[in-house]
Length: 491
Image 1 (cartoon, rainbow, N blue to C red):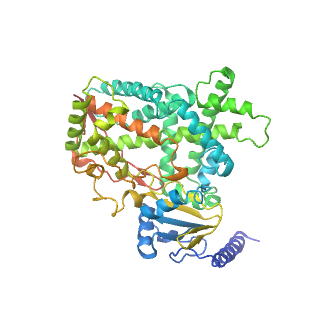
Image 2: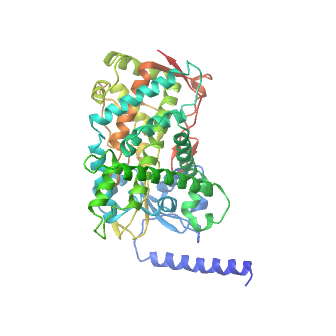
Image 3: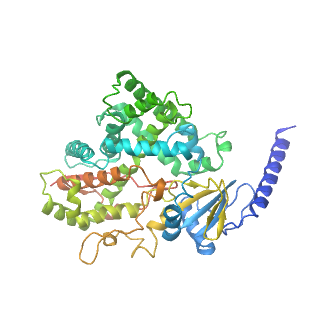
């Protein structure tokens, strides 16, 4: 049989399987949605540059709970604060599953905290949260690490002497060093070539997943695997990252003192030794490698991108920057490092930081959830094996929840007396049982790093505020902010 005949036969088989799948799904009362084509589903109807905008458009016709087909994969999209909260918080146990994203499955070999479900997820999440708390996440020990790193950051920025520089990798180093202290009990020099190379890899991974090829890989992995393209380079880079982590684990094994664990890896190795005779234990080498990679990736690019975006916002809105500096000078002055307890005395600064996260909308889709069993939701049935997308974009930019959702407006987080006010629709870290494990760490980093920078510097750019474009460079899995040469003028 020649190649063309094989392809035709393969196409017919897939089409028949698709028709069987669609027919089988009719026994459920699925949420409504647009008509899907065989094999490619609703992909032709999506905006390839910003798919979440298409999801919003569909919800205008089909409502806040919509069924779509992303290629072969059935997905239910939850749009708006009410639907997302009802699912992730009110029905948290039903929506606790994590979708088996092909990219993450290959990157982690299916192991680790990020992609796991069931008992593996419960054990790894409980252990990770308790261990990170023991090493200071949300406590004073971690605060002191961040304060110390902020001094390194300010000292490096001073060396530019008011000349333009790109802060991307400097901020990446700064933020990554915090998670490195917790995981590896080690910080790296901003000139460490291996460290900078790893940060380049992490940035490439985020860009790839936010680009068209990354999105296509998660929909048609079996096809994209056999095509030329950047996916092969990205996976080779991921293997480099894994080798770095394995090297660090081996170093920890050789110097481990079970009575005095130094960091997350030591604690995990201790637990591995304690449970080595339990056949069903989740504390084994593969889960350690992949969970450390989860923490390293998640603890680096997300927060550093948010700080970089914050600096762009402050350059674009110099009046907001000036007002923050006046508030900071009044409460802290310029000679003391900020502490988390200062936050309650800096309501405008706190409001700006929250608005930066809301407006950036860093992960518009959240990480997809997954129906581990048939789920009853709002009178519909979401069948087992359906991907569930809680559209965080629709929550952070919801017109019912925010006065001016499409404008940068710190008043969203201030009451009539200029006191900070919370908004339940503020969900940049998602919500429920799958919310980001590093939320308290990220909040602490954003506050201390940004306040410490504004104490010492005023930020601008050569081309002026109007040259700053706050529209993301990429909008796929993540909204990746644009890079700019910025000027830090000492105050």
